[in-house]
Length: 293
Image: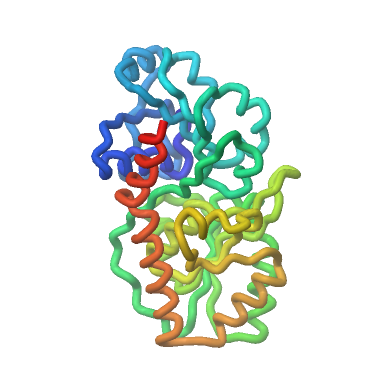
């Protein structure tokens, strides 16, 4: 891949290795968020020789431009975000493979033979004790994509009815610093955006899984899911809303609770991520997909 957005490919590689799959992974550019671990960097002229012994290549983030550097391997597109959403028709024509991996549910209607794989998250941080006053957080990597203005407006409206703290920042910080500021929250609001660039959106991303893995109650979206998550993984313990009315009602309802109920919801959310989206769980699911080729 060219850029490994959200360190997604790095965690997929760790997942395959956790499932005892012989796998390698590289990217062209380092990430701006300074992840403590990243895929090693490679230059295009080394791709062909480096991957010559691979039977299957997973092209994370739909980087079809790099397929010209590969030989006769099966090359599987892993559709993960904006690039595929905005250019899926032409990207589909660049890949000839038995299936397409999709990280977002709206792609089930765009990709040929889709197989759903959310992504992998492992965060080994102790769960923060519940705050005396509930803390709601929102830390968007891209405010226009995440619907930040609407989230701020709705949360500030709710502050007139409920006693809680709201912490929001779009300042660019390192990945570790972002995890720390998420960890200081009790409830995390990730997303409120039904469209992106005129295309259907409203699908939770890696930041929602990160917050869940930190033991936060998460409010986000999966507008076009239509049962895909439940069919693939089971019950999703994150709170999915359709629109701003849903966000308002869901957050307002949570703010009526405290203590053991909040802690219980946090634990259920964290357990879900451990069960379904750890490196090993993700690696085993991807291994099933690949061994079916």
